[in-house]
Length: 268
Image (cartoon, rainbow, N blue to C red; front, side):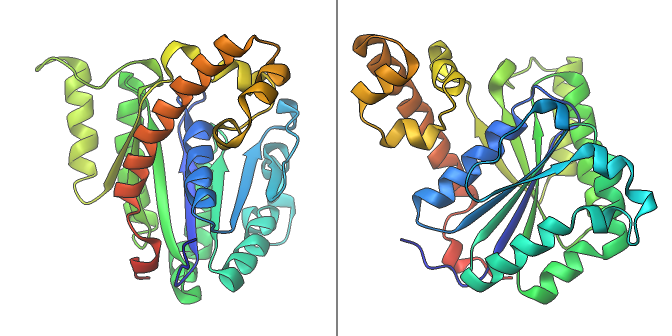
């Protein structure tokens, strides 16, 4: 079990859905939970997603953000649950992960700008990271570069992390292509950032477990026969899926360990 010297705040954002943002946020949660660290996950999503929060998860509706101008404090007031879990994390040297829904860039920028968010975190002794997720599409790469730049401008105290999610394919582009130029823009804007590559699941291995409401960590730590019953598949298919999930876990754990090598050593 890791004993961290301070709390950590990680925000995960992407300009649109379907690029693996929540998968990346969930993986960060599992990375720290696996190490025995207290983790609080804040989901900012539409009520239409019918999300049922799990233990240590907090739900904030995007519809409430749209009406935030009517509240004293605006966006900061609507996002008050974040402050509450941050206070808990400070007391336990835990981790708060904020999973921003797609299309909330303006609300996020308003929060960072109006509150001096990075400065507040620093005054609390909390290390803050802005984790920007992109797939290999040109529009996602271009918007990732823009988000990196705007984050540096609005909240220079946040450490930048780029998540290269291979959910829709690899990032090995031929020289001179529009994709290669877009990726070069991301790399230029993230010269001082940390980088994490998240491979796609082989054989769609996680799909039956997701349908059953299971997390990767639960798949990794549960009895195969119980999993087979839970997903309604035979033991052979279940074990094959678990094996591929384990490969993904090992590869991503290496990536997260490189990006966050020793939480006890991360200085505020």
